[in-house]
Structures are given as structure tokens and as C-alpha cells.
Image (cartoon, rainbow over all chains, first blue to last red; front, side, top):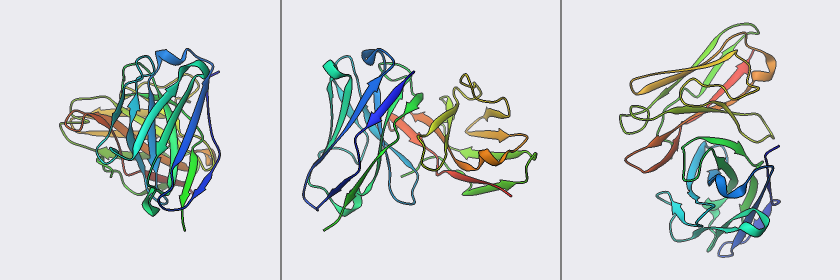
Length: 121
Length: 110
């Protein structure tokens, strides 16, 4: 069965960096794009962008350029989200979420459990 | 920031029918499919409805979706206690060239 297993919660200080991992199993990794979605405390879901798991080419939504980097290690079917120069407002749960297609079909069919990133001094 | 608008809450007693609306624009719902996601506390979000009205395997037929113009709806008939969750609509937005989600609706079973 399809599984997206994300890394554990992180507590970081402002200005630090964090790298969240998302290990996929149960399907051919390169056949499905990977989305990243953020949910800030008490807020709704916010799409951050996606990465083509065949080419490694990322695309970022407005508001997620510069400090946010999507990457892959296809040898272990894992996607990564790195956030640099962390700010308090980056505190959120970050989800990896599989798309039905690659490139995007616009349908997210499986989600990870989410990784809580807390930014606090 | 959510581009699609949903009511913040909806409620019903067991067995009742609850409907959740999702309002968008011509650049998203008006031109593209709508999907619905269920978020139960402490669990991964789950795809409930895709392409406006299609149900993934395993989703009970108590859940149904529809779309008209720039709005969509999710209906839950025969409401059950386990349906208490947050529900989000989602669609592709041609202007933003990305996925957009609704503001989310919390369904409470009274």
C-alpha cells in the first residue's frame, strides 16, 4: 500500500534551517509528483508547490520562493523540504502529498502524516 | 492564504444530511475539477472526492460531490459520528498556476 513516512517534529531557533524528509513506498516513485502543503496553527491548508519526481524540477507557489527548497533522493524514494533562515511564522505542520500524476494532475491522492516545525527562541 | 471560500462550520445529528459549499472563481473552480479532503484529528488528510464527484475506492457512497459554475458542494448523507472532521475543497488555479484550497469547514456531529 502507498505510504508517505515523514520525519519527526523539529524545534528550531529563528535563523536556523530545517530539512523535512518524506519517504515513499508502495508505488513507483517517479510516476507521481510530490506536493508540499503547509498548515499553520489554527489555519487551513496552503499549497507550497511541487517537484517532478522524474526530472527533479521543482516549482514553488507564490510566497514560497527563496527560503524553501524541494529536492529528491530517488535512490531511496525520498523527497525533501528544506527551509532556511527560519522565522516564527514558519511554525506549522508541513505535509508531503502525492499527486495522481507526474507532471501534476492536480489531484492529491495520498498524504503523509505531517511534520511539525516549531520556530522559537 | 485560502482562495476558495467555505463556511467555517456545519453540524447535524446522526443520520442527517449535511452540505458544505466551496466558492471560487472562473480561474479555479470555473475551469477545473474540484477535489475534497477529509482531515481527522491526528491523521493524514484523506482524498474524499476527486474530479468533482468521483469517489476513491473505499470511500462510502454517503459522500457525494457536485459542481456548478464557480461553486462546488460536498454532501454527507446519513451523518455518522466518525464523520466529525475538517473538510477542505481544492482545485487547480490557472491564474496562480498552482493548487488552491478552501478555508476549511469543521463538521460537528451533535
